[in-house]
Image (cartoon, rainbow, N blue to C red; front, side, top):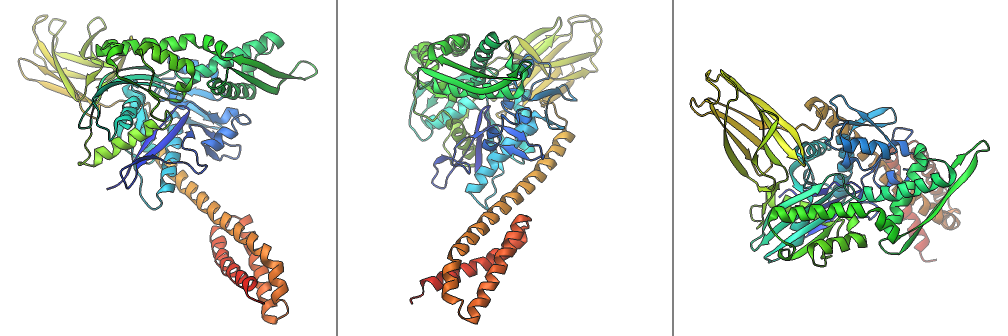
Length: 608
């Protein structure tokens, strides 16, 4: 059976997992041995694309061309409140795309958020393929915040397609964490998953039953609430204090801003373990007629940080209370609370969680890895009919129609288990009305979002209120929404399958897929060259180390002198091929070097 990789496409870090041959879920480490990879993409001055740790390391010196927290922008409109907020705090340029979507400027090129996300997904695919060489790993389950709307989910799926992945399912992050938590265990309990990551917050309440049944009872969240917001509170505190002291706003210097952001994130992490953290940024900026170098030096204690973030914690608690209310449960009904996401390491977050659920949260899962593991488990379950696992998820947002007077008429409520369907009868609102426009809406918080529209035409002319239209909404297990409208008397029918738009046309997606594939071919060629080069350099070093000893032993014979001369030639040719990045020549000379090294080792080990 073909393996399916599970990918947690995170705001701050991403992670990839797989089910091994023994049926055990495992997270796959990257080349550096890290089990998570920073969700950061950069383009260098020479046009080279960097992803992950290498992109993060150069983020200060190349801040304008380094993208982080892209997940907070995916599937959003350029003029939306979250994007307006992001434009004020990031060091890179966010522009408006041709469809009112978000485009990110790196060097002289604009990239969609889906392309940026695809680069991260490609990196995760490469990490998996390096651990399973020669094995096709094209199918994936990708996780998203439970509170993502249809547009954000479709944008994530498009990012997967651009990356060359067959995305067989999009699964909610808290649900994935619950799968990992309960997988292979016999239990019957109600749990809450408290998922506070780098950019988003979700809470889901699930019933885990015997026989591998995972039923989501309720979910709630905020797709613009996470670790980034906690970082920004420290950033503002540092910058405002510096401005008060020196009269200089560090937000106006992109490199200085990035240095402060990095220091704020580091201080935040330290404050989870210690009571006070120092921020020391020498030569942060030059100022004044004499170009005087200014330094930023401040200490922040845990109590100050918690005060700065008090309203963020309260937002999390309000969402938790709302989820319990929707589930018609109280804190005493929740038997276990599972912490997910890096921000749950913060002591104040853990305390807030225990306060709202009236119990100490469980720390039995790895907060950074559990979501990817759950995605891998779901991937195996989708392909393996023998897998004893049933997942019943819910729709995070209410669905309905926009009726006369711009009134939202709900057909499927928030937190309804899918698959599901619902039918409601409406009447025409005007005399002699022969057509009805059906506006399919999704309600997110207090806002309505248009998912699709269609016309039911050819209605018989009648007086006001005399024509009844029956409308049916249905959602399948993949979350695809279909809407049918029928004239109750004549049976005249029209329907639509709602295909959410991610802000990209199909032609754009196809072009991006080609570009991404070309990059992968080039990247794999670069990786092969790097591997061959490193092997050749190792052979050269070993031969040159043995050369003096071998020369002393064989130089007295004509055969020995000839062999040494040939070795010098091969060494010179290999070094020249390495300098010119000539893959085929390096491979050819490496074979000769391997034979030479074997001969050299034989000579020095020969008894005298």
